[in-house]
Image 1 (tube, rainbow, N blue to C red):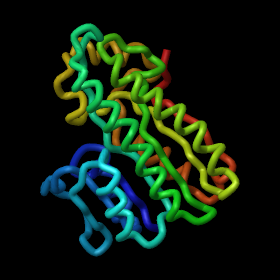
Image 2 (cartoon, helix red, strand yellow):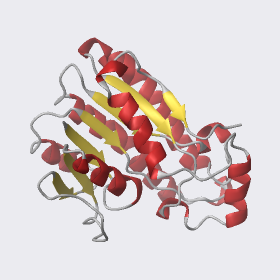
Image 3 (cartoon, rainbow, N blue to C red):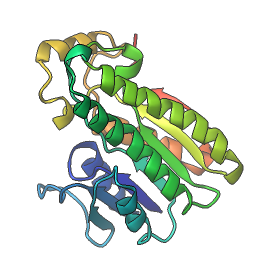
Image 4 (tube, rainbow, N blue to C red):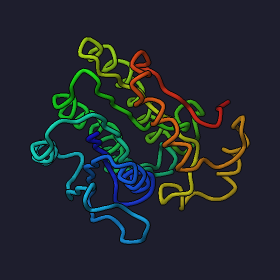
Length: 229
């Protein structure tokens, strides 16, 4: 399969790039910077990387021109900023919305055009949205928009056989949460049915399920990990 993954320089995206190349799939990754060199990473025979701004339509268009057929798109790129709504700079608001939502829209639009009738789009949302976490208003709003986009695009692309689903991970120990106080993270974990951090393997397990040929009747869904309350 040809799999496109955004935000592959580190974290979840880097893990997924390694995971799927090791399975023998061709992975097309992108990020603002080159991937971190720490191993294990990816087999260069199966991995193709391009440095780009995921919010820039022209750069995404150029990226798509080098790919001949897309089977799976994983919209992973995302950023966060924890702050009270009254103290969040508008520049931060725009940056989060552009990276988490607009980039998801742009990639979905361009990659869907390269898919056949078994295409899969997987978007990354977050449990921050259903939990309505204080201090995460903009981040949560951007992920709520991803859920809405998932539901609507699922209907719009259904006639082409393309499914669109989302995953809402519980906190995973990546750079995205490294600046969040430990007490705050403990409070989040205590609100989950399963009170632990998520793992990269939790993410790939759900993606594997959603991209199976037998999952072609599942679309417009968001699967939240760990249980939320």
